[in-house]
Structures are given as C-alpha cells and as structure tokens.
Length: 357
Ligand SMILES: NC(=O)c1ccc[n+]([C@@H]2O[C@H](COP(=O)([O-])OP(=O)(O)OC[C@H]3O[C@@H](n4cnc5c(N)ncnc54)[C@H](OP(=O)(O)O)[C@@H]3O)[C@@H](O)[C@H]2O)c1
Image (cartoon, rainbow, N blue to C red):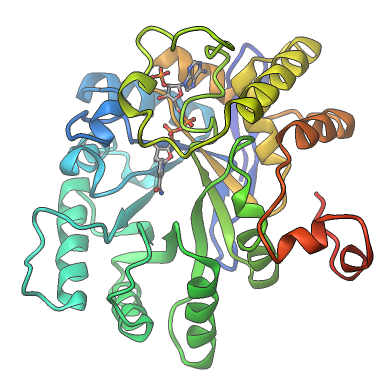
C-alpha cells in the first residue's frame, strides 16, 4: 500500500488515504497536469511542459509514489490529457487517472442532449488518454442546466460500462452536492465519492459548508491550487514586483481573490515556520493542508522538476499543533452568514463547534 519515496534526500513512504466513500486508496500527494501543453488563454498561461518535460515529471511522480494524476479535457484544449496518456503509455496500470469533463468545449455538439454531450466528452478524453477507463471521473463544474437525475443516470451508466471506476465533482456548491447525494441514496446510482475544491491558506471558504458536508457524507476532498494559485511559493514579497517568469503575470486576473493584508500575513507566518522547521514555504503550506479534516489528497502544481521535487517534500512529516494554530490564526477570516454566528464565541458556537483535525 505504501510506495517508497525519495524527495528532499530523506526517504519516506507516501501515505495513502481512502477516497471518501469509495474503496480506492490514493496517495496524499497527487500531481496536476494544468501545466501540460500550454495552449489557451487560461490554462496555457500556467506554464508549458512539452511531452519530454512532462514525461520526466511523471517519472519523478511515479518514483515517489505519487500515482494519482489529475487532468481535464479543458486543459490546453485536450493536450494535457494527450500528453499524460503518452507519458503513461506502457505503464497505465501503475497510475490512477482522474479527469474532468463538463466545461463548455469547442468539440461539443450544440444540439446534443446533456447525456450525449457528456458521453461524447468522456469518449474523447479516453481516446486522448489512451485508456479504456479513468479511475475517477469528475464533473468540472456545477451545470445548472442539467437536472441532477439526468446527470446521475448518465454517470451511473459510465460506471456500469466500466469507463469510470469512481465519480466525483469539482467546484460544486454544497446544496447541489447534498441534493445529488440524497437522490443517489434514494435510488441505486453510483455515489460521488470526492470533490475537487479550491482550498489553501489564502482560500478557506471550503471550510464553512463543504468540509462539514464531506465529514458527514464521506466525500473526500482533493485540494486544487494548494499554493493559492501559485502565490504561496516563497517568491512573492510585500511591495515588490511579481517574481520574474511566474505565471502570475499572465493569470493574476483568474486567481481566486485575496486581500493583500491576508496574503502577506500568511506569507510572513509561512516564512517564519519554514525557518523553524528547515522546510520550504511550499512544503509548509501543503503540509498544513494535509493536516486538515477531509483532505484526502493535495494536487501539486509544478512546472519544472525543481518545483516538483520541492513540493514532494511536503509529505512524510507533520507541523506541530502550535505551528498549525499559528497558520490557522494568520489565515483566519470571518465567514459569511450564518456561519459567523457559530464562529464567534457564544451560545451558537456551543451548539456547533468548528471541526478540528
Ligand atoms: N478543479 C479545478 O477547477 C482546478 C482549478 C485549478 C487547478 N486545478 C488542479 O490543481 C493543480 C494545481 O493547481 P495550481 O497549479 O494552481 O497549484 P498551486 O500549487 O497553487 O500553484 C502552482 C504554481 O506555483 C509555482 N510553484 C509551485 N511549486 C513551487 C515551488 N516549489 N517553488 C516555487 N514556485 C512553485 C509554479 O508557478 P510559477 O513557476 O509560474 O510561479 C506552479 O505552476 C492543477 O494542475 C490542476 O490539476 C483544478
């Protein structure tokens, strides 16, 4: 179950965690392929790994026990899936592939019904990936145009046909996820076992609704943009220009917003704890996520070998309770209503204390 990993010179085994209600164990670190390919206004600006570089990153991941790869049909217009498929050629059995479909796609037939559209999208993904199944099929986003029953029937058919071993969502509002799970439990559909969520020290909105839902309903979280869309890397400095070569030059308008005061407060705390622990800023930021309830796996973003090797050193050790508390304090923001009532000290909080790791 545990694969040996060599990262920052020390040897440890890559911890595995059960993915929500499924029977699938996944490594606590996954690798995101958003940087593969490099085309298109949003995803192309993440950085560009060609086939040779991508293969090298996949090699390093597999050696380190990072066997879960996240991709999407939307990344670089499908090129990311194609590059991942080619990097895994001949060793597909060593990897778990999670892909995402459901965002508007240039190849969609505008006249197709939702079930046909999703079926065609999955077939294209399988073809690009060079495989007959994915281990986790995720809906990239909540599509209010598709009734949940139709969606669940369609996904269930994919599972029964063996084309998707498990199903999950991404960026779903909690009410819709809960509604879908309730429909599933009344019938005999395959159940969403995971959700891919934006969760980082500068984006803790996940905690208010989706985290308690995950605990209650056994939905595992795969955390995307663990470095806050590339901002918790140790390269950003208060009052200084953006680091040279960083994707932030191109994608800052897409980055989940964060006030400067919060961002630099978190960065200061990260630097301090990195110094204390002898770890790097990204390693500390990712390790914090690994200690949070419901987080099954953190999806690493790295556009070169040095970044990947650094980030692999985020697992295999733990921040102390005191360091976790300092990071919690530095990153805490007042949640929206009704959670505000339960967050402040007082009778409401006694009724519903926040989850603790
Ligand atoms: N479901 C969704 O809607 C969704 C959305 C976004 C992402 N994702 C998934 O999550 C994955 C990761 O997202 P992300 O790339 O935004 O993650 P991230 O960890 O927030 O940012 C990664 C970026 O930070 C910089 N970086 C990473 N490690 C570093 C290190 N050790 N030292 C210095 N700089 C470092 C690199 O950018 P620079 O070198 O350019 O600074 C890298 O591209 C994606 O590949 C994708 O699979 C999913």
